[in-house]
Image (cartoon, rainbow, N blue to C red):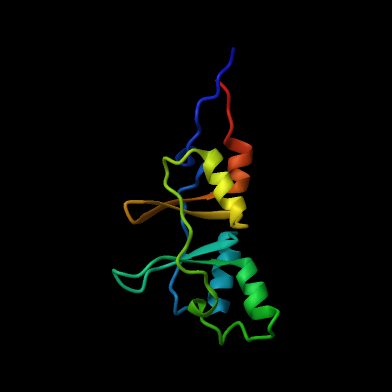
Length: 133
């Protein structure tokens, strides 16, 4: 009989993290997203007691383009989500999938001891997350 071994977030996350400054314009962030072929940027903390934020393509669509705002006149801090919902690298992917879907997210940062160590997505969980041994 085969038993399922837990798969952890650290097993399916990618370690390449794309970070943007909160004072960057949305135009700059969008250019960065296009160049790096990503749909999410982590927004850097402004100071030691701050929290990380997240900027998604959907934020740009809903909060900038749909409202007919100029991409080069809106700063990232105006449209980002903060604090970012994050998960721990040792979280079971099943719980991570539940958390992401509960909040309507497709991806989130992975944090360990206050540091971002990666990004996990529903896509990476679905394609790589549930293995049997």
